[in-house]
Length: 171
Image 1 (tube, rainbow, N blue to C red):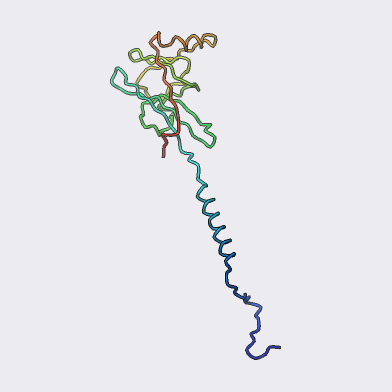
Image 2: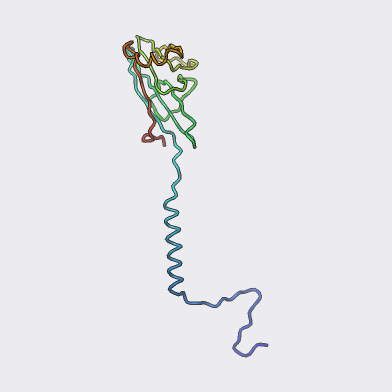
């Protein structure tokens, strides 16, 4: 039974007694708040946008082609080299307009008139649309690769390294 002035707790409400916050409670709260802020600020979302490298080659006919490399993916497992008439580094290799090049560390090439000779690394199937230059693959015998790499410059062949270093990204 209730005495006058005493409130009866209701089943629908829960009344809690309020306790003043102690100094230790305040320090504990500040510590956990600081810890949460530090943790959240150190977590960064990784940037998975494409990284690229590009090199321009002027042709004798006045046109331009580009050697392009694009790398992307969570583990960087998408890594494509291409020869393209499109100078946009963020445009991925297009089978209809570009040549894709087999995986290689460097591209060795020689431009003779309207013909681009590729050495060691080879271009895949020609694109469906007309390309500004004729591309000819010159495979190097696996037993002569070291000799080729030592002597390519004496044959008028240029070595091109398209290095993707993370400084150039597509949005």
